[in-house]
Image (cartoon, rainbow, N blue to C red; front, side, top):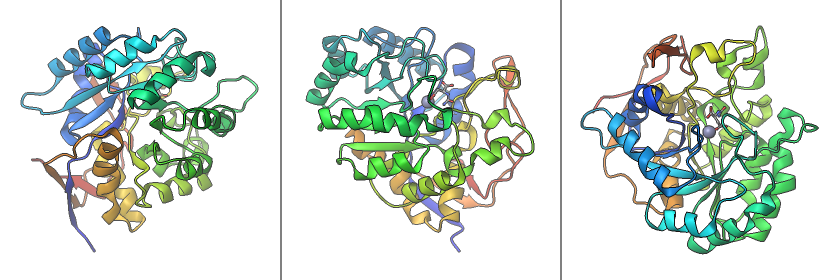
Length: 346
Ligand code: NCD
Ligand code: ZN
């Protein structure tokens, strides 16, 4: 049995770092493990211009712990009125690493999202031309579509059209939650990839809903039935270069989770790599962890792999029940559990 593994330092290709005091409180957890991260733009107001992206990047850099070499990669929040020239310029000057599609009102702070994919076509055409990554929250928001079906319906109605109309567009299907999405990505062209979160590999909707409702396991896209969780585990540990690490860590103050209408989002940053390691270990695929966590993402984003490494050892810590942050507290993913792996300090 392997008791120790060393892999190239991983990157997190999907994080919510927030802003202000919350940014200050959470960024260190991500920077402790990951060298780079694709930072989501769903702030209030959302990051829609290159100037906003540069200013947000500077705030993240200022919030980092002393000596950290963490590098935030900022994404542009697409709207119905995004201008192709402006986003191309933002990409070419390095202000934006990618652009993100939030269907309007699909999730936290997405009110300014895209109402009709057709409105985005000039932007997508330009992104395809310049090789700018297109990141997708793949859920429809139609009231008549059940929340558990929204990802599968998005593939059918929207995603299949986008990949047909823009075959060269470098696309990431973010935080996939279904076998349908895993199959769609596996059978699409080499320019279509996906991120997978720790929670969608660990829990099914039963974990969230049986024996009492657990608001800290509620995120979007919502966790699905067990068959989907198993399909995602298979995809993540398959060794395919199309699947890579993206935690979707999304902190919300405890009082906004434990309430009659709780926010969506799981704060998994504190023990993210340990959480993934547990899954790969359970699947007998620890030899595939490095590709998923540290190699496939940089290859997709056309960035160099990290030169330094991290070491994980068997025998983990007990995850605290809550973590103080920004005058309130956050309940981390796996709260109260003892993880099978521990990240050694540098
Ligand atoms: C995210 C958030 O809180 O910003 N929430 C979530 O449940 N994942 C938004 C998102 O990525 O959908
Ligand atoms: Zn997200």
